Length: 256
Length: 218
Image (cartoon, rainbow over all chains, first blue to last red; front, side, top):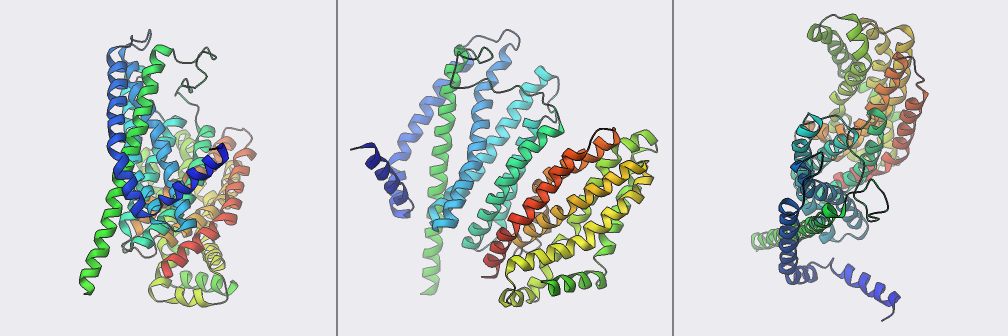
């Protein structure tokens, strides 16, 4: 199979997932494996990181919070990105699975944002001497958290499911524009205390980058968090699909 | 479109909610702050610009659910939707009416109230200019939020929750411009940013709001 036909095959099978029946079959098949991989990656990454890496010269043991902080922050942003993509697919293609995936991603992403904020605060107290500073990165995460709350609240407030799906999708798209805008607006507003990115793929090129002793377990826990997000997303979407089916059945019962 | 605009302005003036409500709220905020923080002139001058911007923002928030709420309940909005005027135009006319009855009076009153907070003439001028450029965005974003929460009963809290994060960039640049002027720096940069956000909102939000209106009216 050539690369082009491979890509074509991937997309055609990807769009087939929008069919709830195919999605349920596929996700039911893969979910146990995803969960197994999540457990392996997360437990290995976290145990390796917490117990088998040296303390940092200046930060001591507090450096180890990085194994929770960085992956959860990554997933918090990816969560919102996923909501936007899911909403866009819903508005264009009108396939329920995509918007249900967006709905399922919201609570997970919100929790990840909260974990990132909490671990950051716990790390900040001994390092910066304060739990919270109005630093651009911290502030943008707080704003991201507000976006998640607003998105979820709108879902809860509207009773008609399809109407809620449409309106939350519109909100997610406009919110994405303003989230990016806020991200760069806060840069003008306050100078940062948060360090720059030290985790990049081009490890060893940049002298400022994190040492590979820390990088390897961190990479593993980042993969673990990604898998965890994916697993929770699948579980959430499956629940939403089932809840929809239940409602249809109930409506059917009542009608007869 | 002009008819809708004129109708909304007249309605909000005659029902006593428009001009009065936002302005009086703004006045109360500015008058109460010195009582809460003490009459220290240099402190008031320092926090004044940000405070006036915050007061303007909250005053704008007060009347948002009136923009579409009443028309939705008594069916006027359904009639407007079937009229030849596209919903994008309805949204723009209603946002403009909201701005004329809240944003504009606030922007004009701000320099006067700035005197109470020990702002000098020059800073007050910049404040007025930044509010004139920034409050249209507040009305536009607010009306967009109002279209989203149209069908929600008691949606006021939800509306504020949705709208506040969207207000952040405008608030940052607006307060920044006035602060820069107070410190004697150049203030054109933030003003250009506010204008850019306003123009962007005028260009993009009508389509999203009209989509939300269509969803709610279907």
